[in-house]
Length: 179
Image (cartoon, rainbow, N blue to C red; front, side, top):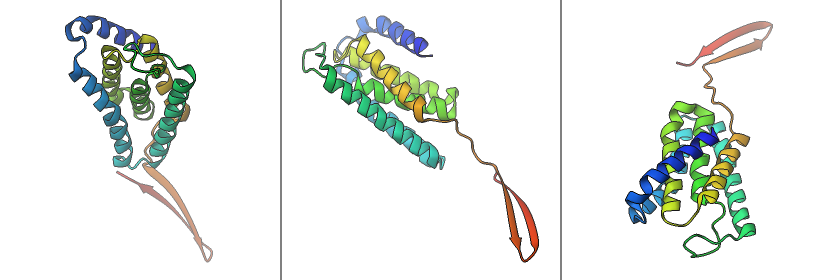
């Protein structure tokens, strides 16, 4: 799966880079998706009343941040635009791919395809802005996806519940079904 994502990002990047090089609009969209994707993902867990998913997402997001910024501190790789030494790995990419991977793992591939596309665009925006190179992007994607897979389980909506009560020698079995 990761190989497919990387290949698609590379093809997209190579085909569109000459057309939009150094476009600040693209960079701003990438910055926006950094906030929108995790916020929308967490909101989805609340809308679905998925408390277990909310907790899994939070743990995964925290691990993504710790790994990403820990590596930035340890590696000190200079950015392609030479603005500072926080290039490796890409925080935008790790965060957005963590959101996409969470949706994929928890709710299924069909719901995650648009999120993966936005995460890929965010990765592209970081290369286009000359903040990262392809190695930074790949490392960020691996961190985000890996963190998500460590904590996330498949969503199972509980439709049925079996109940049992005992009172003064009487036994009652019940079946609740939520539509």
